[in-house]
Length: 257
Image 1 (tube, rainbow, N blue to C red):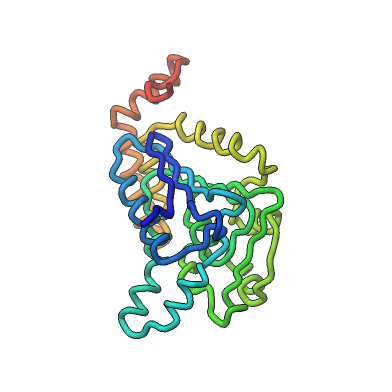
Image 2 (cartoon, rainbow, N blue to C red):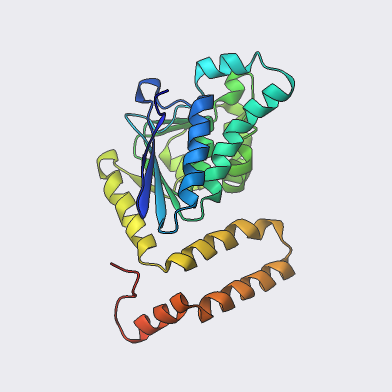
């Protein structure tokens, strides 16, 4: 079976949706491969960041129609297992221990917005088009909500319920994208963001991402206790000592190439 992804390993790895002829629409197999790719990358100790993108004109135009047709005929546990595939793919992106930087060009619809929201940083093309299109199809953006709603909040009341397309400026104000760029400058922008990540302590970045992910489910006292423990652990670590020494000695830290 041909791969639905192109995975380029390395300290800054790349995961590319590779179905440009289908506008990188998500099928059951695509989702399985996304989840597996991010789980595999998470085991790489040298991994510093992951760039998530789509080959061709579109980042991801939503669900594959053929998959939706097959899924609509399932029932019981088979239907539930199938519905969980999108959740598993988004969760694998969200749980990646290093920053995930998404490159969002062309059409970003439905499940593609789940992947985008699960990323840590997103760069949107100047002419990108976004849409929570599910209600137009008689379904709803349920699975992606675990990743989308923490970012866009009450904006969902409009864009979920009207299924209207919106542009990068609206996506920026919602928090779905963090930068807007002409498409021909997107790769330079993403390299710049990745360079910022590489200038930071590798363990510190991983710890910071873990802290961010853990915060929402805890009460204020737990948040304070956990954040203090994280700080003390980092401050006394070899990486923390090296970072402080490099600052005081006005030199680059050892992890900066």
